[in-house]
Length: 310
Image (tube, rainbow, N blue to C red; front, side):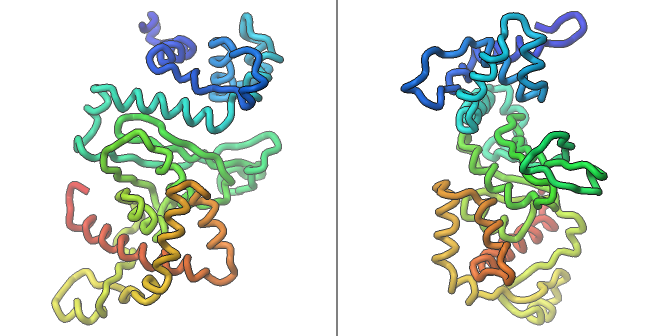
């Protein structure tokens, strides 16, 4: 219930959410054979607050009654693995998706539209991901926090990476974390989250990629025929050049193997894209993915110009 000033204490909110979906059950000890005791619910909540609100374990323990600092540190070290946190978050996302009220936000009952965007955050301590960026941090260092949200108002994934990294390679990583929906997925980003390779991989994963591109009229479109073919027909939107079909066909098996590796989570998309783009000359597979993505991008741009709802 709301207090007189209209606020709900965050601890009360966490406890009520836990009563509904029992997300604390996913915080399992990293070494089950050696675990002596399951932490109290209050200790787990304190860990979530300390980390989630960036308060710090020592400070939170000092301002909390009945929470000992060494117990809190031990709980976070042994129970707060990335896998456990993602399982707990997916449990909450699943609970949100099963609420009738959340479906009221859907524009189309058969389509789940999601989006992702990054924000730059200053980092004042030593951090492997932190980089200098004069544009965003002046002389300081910082990171990018990249967050995913869908129409049902569930935050189903976020990641932290260097502020100097492009956001696009991390889009596929987040989309593969959204495993609790059976609806057709459409995903949007801004221009920083777009590359032609993302169009290609999302197509193979069955996700419609619909980025909001700046200056979309300046984007190049492609076809399977020469530009003159469409010019002679009087088309107003003309392709830049034909698609290199031979390049795609030559590396088709490699493309499928690349996507299967991502889908089966043997490696993350961001890791693979970084490796492919690190070569001094563009890797043949990277070029083939890019070429196939141009087909999907061209279809999207033409649909974007033609479909007012989109």
